[in-house]
Length: 258
View 1 (cartoon, one colour):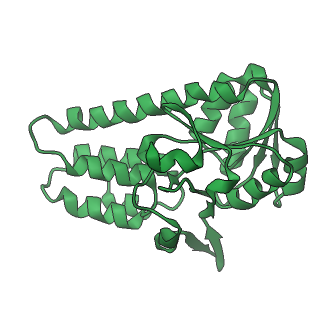
View 2 (cartoon, one colour; view 1 turned 30 degrees about the vertical axis):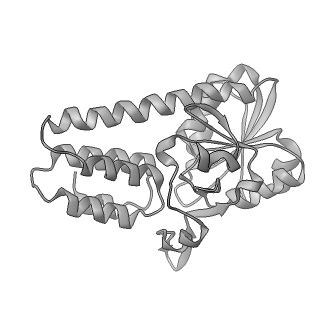
View 3 (tube, one colour; view 1 turned 135 degrees about the horizontal axis):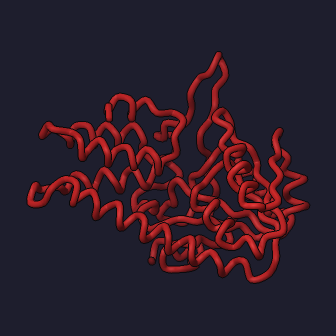
């Protein structure tokens, strides 16, 4: 695994990049891995799971093998992720239509696990990798009725969906959300129509030192043939009904006291 390829990755999700950092760490033979871990932190500033992964790997002291040390991190992240997905069942207390954006593996798993309580899924596409189309294919293969929308179909989704279910790239100390570009107006739309907005996350994605003033530091665009593609936007906790993490349901204003 080439560290420069990880640094240049402008397509993969934060979870996939964190996974690649762990693989690189296991394979890397040098003793200067902290140099690269610092580069990963800076390059992907604001991505909670990447920051958590780099901080954990920086604590390696050589007393056990890298494979065993990294394995403990894998197990922790998987345990917390699985627990969050399991707790998502509490928002499906009736049969609902679900809206989401782009592709979140946690959202995918929550929908599949609760498919008997889901009438239909609306996916708002997010370019340039067309991740929403991948989620559409995945959910459709499980027999879940799914519609993918383009061209910012906020009105249609706001009128048609019962709930908005989001993933998360980072949750700030005061309960705000950094996630796929388009999340903020979609959350605004659902609030306008008095529909609940939920985000699936884990403690590893909650930052104790990130606030809105830090948003400008995020690597947040790439240029493709002269066009600027934004990766993320910032959604205030006041627009979010609640987060579902490995310990259950938590309101945005409770995050700093968790």
